[in-house]
Image (cartoon, rainbow, N blue to C red; front, top):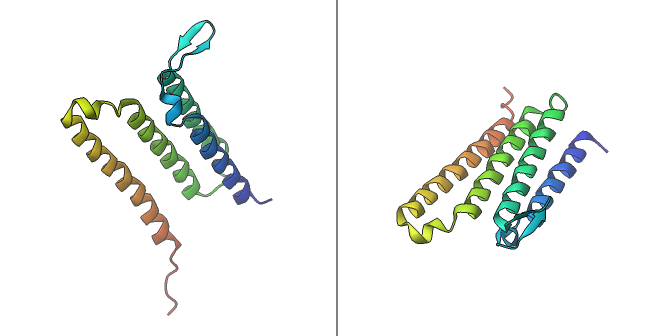
Length: 133
């Protein structure tokens, strides 16, 4: 198995773990107890999201020098994407009470997707080979 396949497997496992554990159902108010301290669903969701972000950061750190710079950037962008959607789940209820929050949320989501698009555009332009003369 090559390093690229192993990295894809790690990224896929992190993605599946974040979706399976930190989905919208995890943000409900079902109590969960850790060390006799009851945690709400939102607190549990936030903890899982932070753990997934930390795992991506650690994977990026331990794979430094072994993978391409593009892959390092992909890990960083994945952390930003996870954080953005975690904030959306945690504070998404504000848009019903405050219309200005809804406008701000839309602007922030557009900015997040524009940032992700810049990463993809840089990847696409880096993949092109110069023409032979």
